[in-house]
Length: 137
Image 1 (cartoon, rainbow, N blue to C red):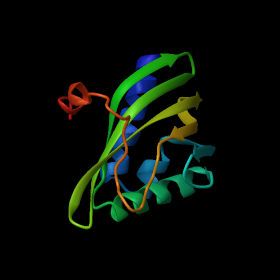
Image 2 (image 1 turned 30 degrees about the vertical axis):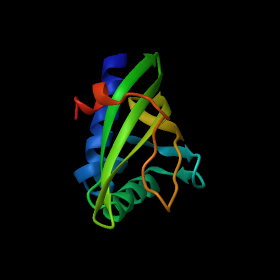
Image 3 (image 1 turned 120 degrees about the vertical axis):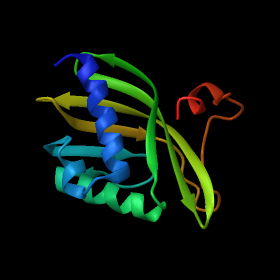
Image 4 (image 1 turned 135 degrees about the vertical axis):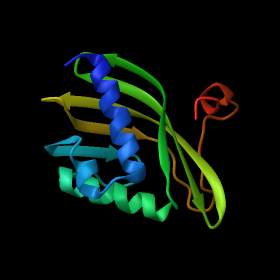
């Protein structure tokens, strides 16, 4: 699989997280895929991953994810992303990075790095100018 198709797979997965059913989200992953995260325990298995993201989307009032930047090498990729949503009627943006491993044309592992503060939704690099990425939304 070419690296272009890996980035296309990530973008399709992000789009599915924003609008698709749990099964449609799960279809982007291998059977035993795992998502590791800095804020919660690993999510293991494609069905659990699909259900997890469908639940996150509902919690954050129609959250949507955008790939801001990507670097790919063989069956791995690293991305920076933005997630836009609404909490308690207020829009917010989380920003983070992820490292991907692919197998058989599907996502096999994601390692997510971002910060969640329930008192103040939203996260980003301190003093980084995100205007280049926000223009892409």
